[in-house]
Image 1: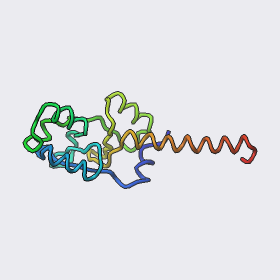
Image 2: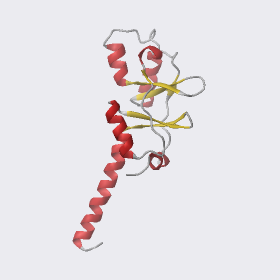
Image 3: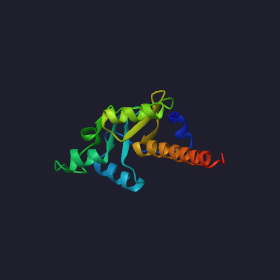
Image 4: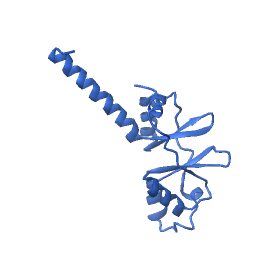
Amino acid sequence: MGKLAGILARRNPVLCVLSESHSVFQAAALLAERELGALLIVDAEGRLTGIFSERDLLRRVIALGRSLKDTRLAEVMTPDPVTATPEDDRRTAISKMRAAGCRHLPVIVSGQVMDMLSMRDLLFVELEEKQSEVVQLRAYISGSY
């Protein structure tokens, strides 16, 4: 299993942040515009204070009949989300996400948000590796290795 730094190096950062004072309506519009499942909530110094996901929108806002425009992210975000560093390996990251029951993992460097990975990101990399292994095994079996 490779380090998260390897995944992050292969792509542009997927970083979408708002402050706790933004409305749920603003967050939902940004999620839709950027086609994301979650965004990060940071304070004035850029430190992570929470995460707001489609699941939070559904369970903490819509299901309770709260106003999208009057509800602030501070009221409905998931505070203190589980995080990772670029030095964490994929297996550790997946274990953290499973234990927390989340699908998005902020990546932190020196207290600042660097990027965010989804479970999909981590599983796609694993799938690519497995496909490569299958190709190598087939070549070995057929004698063309």
